[in-house]
Image (tube, rainbow, N blue to C red; front, top):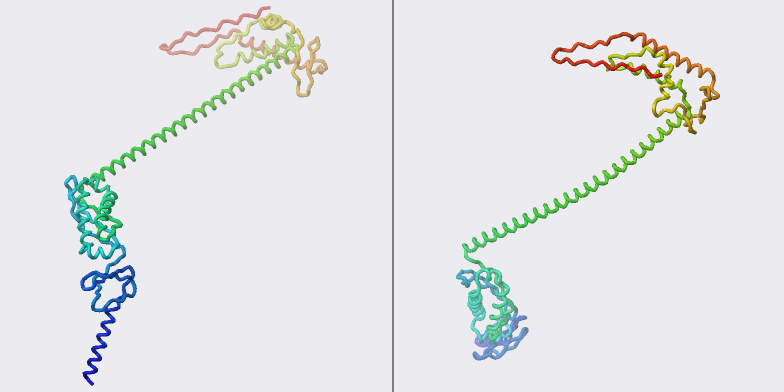
Length: 388
């Protein structure tokens, strides 16, 4: 009984192991390489697959997804004999799992070595400046060479990227100094350009300001000259109207010899006034002079003995124009006004005679002057008696 159970257990175990070896589950985007007695038989597709137990064996499992491999930095010499350190990243995908398994023993290591040799060939034909500024060109050349070389391995290189290109520390320091100098140069150029633009704009503003100021001054002078011209014209017209009015008023009033004598006597006291008058001589023939005043004034050039013509007198405030008759009295005026005018004339004549009697025989007193500044005093010429 015990031996039977042991045999039964061994048979059950064998069945279980056989089932496990007969069934294989493959993940998505994965291909299993099956060998029978060491020879390739088939490739297992994703899902549940049945195998011949103890005969078929899954030797490799190939990932069909796109893979990314980063290679460590490698030293590469440029055309100008400078060592630069370059690390790269390769993006590839397995297209044929059978070739990737049997055409190359380790395709990742093969891709790494191929990348290093290709980089040396490409960078060796460029100087440092081209190497630093030609990343796209290097990536494209490297991808083309790798894709062509790995095609027979069942691998397609989709993309190649250079992560960093590091020149030697001394070169980096020189490059930083050069870059700093170049930036300082551009900053100085931009500063000078800004100052130039500012100066140009300031000059334009000053020019516009000067033009506007000149235009304003021109307009102001024109307006002032126009105003002055108008003022002079108005002033001249006013003076002309005033002279015409006075001239017409005098001729319309028909003045006689008595009025002229009265005006002369009114001016005599004004002649005697003033601080500069040191001597005033009234002729003794003042009476005779007054008698012949009318005839003397009438003989003055420019004053006719009798006004002729028709003259329009200025209008008074009430609109009436007084007229004189042949006797010298105002037509329609009361006799009291005429008498008052005669009395005023007599009083003026009497005042002139009294002033002549009081000043007769007086000698002018000359103020004393120091010897060093003596100035001869000249007496004014004696007034000539008026002609009869």
